[in-house]
Image (cartoon, rainbow, N blue to C red; front, side, top):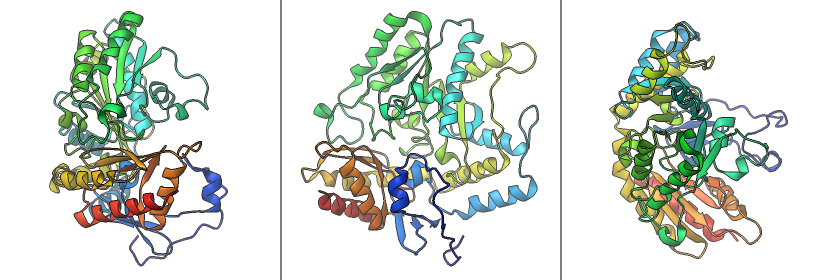
Length: 442
């Protein structure tokens, strides 16, 4: 839709049960986005809302990119859908090859999903299938991390460690344990890049091995925990976790739904942080969010063990109707072409110093108690109001929106992750608006 097209206005807000939303507040005070272009959204009234969050960490190339739109349109006219159960279509294989060319060395087998949540559950199931295929059927235990987020499927939610995502739903999967989170504000406050303290927290995996023996199949963590409020791994932490997984014959899974496709200035966070997992999940930036799509990159060794070790017939009893959907595959190919042609990771690296300076300039004032940044990600943590956690940050979010800047809130943390095409004046506007909103908040 171009800037001059008419925009429909819904006259009934009742039917849509909104996800992760205060439905009652929204439907009495709706904030509607009607269209998007470049770095901005626009309301139905024409107000520009500068996107400080790349949608939900996902529109890394900005909005309304013509190349992606045309690829989707062209594919829809050729073939709208084709199943990938015992059948194939060329564009899904092309998309997988393009992704495999970008993933860390050795992670060359791609299983397509439709979201980060599906990617997390798929990765966990592949890990269990692998352990069984190699004769380690006792390895059924999965280890996550406190404050981790791996989507909202029961697998990812069980391994995840955000209490609010779990407490409403009772029992999770059995045989799950957790490592401690790495947030040490007393030692690492106002860190830029990897904080200095906390590598020792990976050693808790030794305690879990001592407790559970050889029953642990996999450990799943985010290289940088985004949804919980931008928790950057301490220096040496991921390397230590990798070494311990190797020592105890445990698979290491990285959830790169947020850190993939340039967010940290490299194709994947694994590249920036120098640690290669056995399994890597992705979504969001894979298609620039134009069509829902996720994926799981698996080491060649895992693929060969599961596939070649199985009897004739289906090797992995898992999949989705829309795995490798033609429109999503077309969107992925066009997005990865943009990613390469415009060097989006390089743009993120070039902008990181300026973006980091702007983020850490927010340190002034007693309402800001911590700032964390890496790549084009920043978390601005606010002092909570007594007895009302999250209220101050939500007020800041709403004020910023009304002033024309989109931010993201998790608890009392403002998370910023603009499209990788952001320019310096837009960085100034994002942080200037945020600073004013924090000062105005009670």
